[in-house]
Length: 107
Image 1: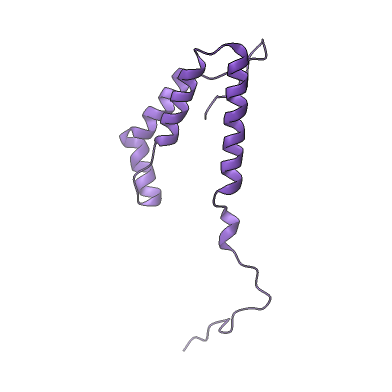
Image 2: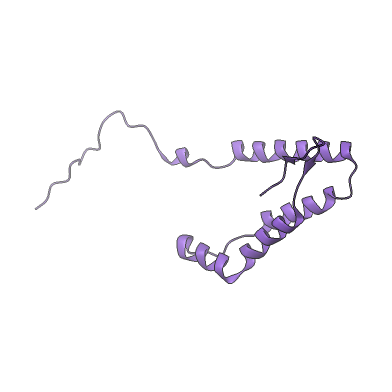
């Protein structure tokens, strides 16, 4: 989420529909897709941006207490997903010794 959870003067969480829409639109645009295709070789999945926009839209019709609760739950879900998801450190295995054929012999 780009700006979700920002606190305004009344200590009420808020998000910007315009910013969420712009972020989602860029994801679906040719530029956003081309960048992802160039970097990763696949089309970008924009579902999370759609979900962010939908969440932001729903919060616009909530009262203050519901909104605070929704933002808190959303933050907890994101944190849990981040903890349980893949980690860049998962690919490394600690070695006790160097590999057998290290350094490689050049003929």
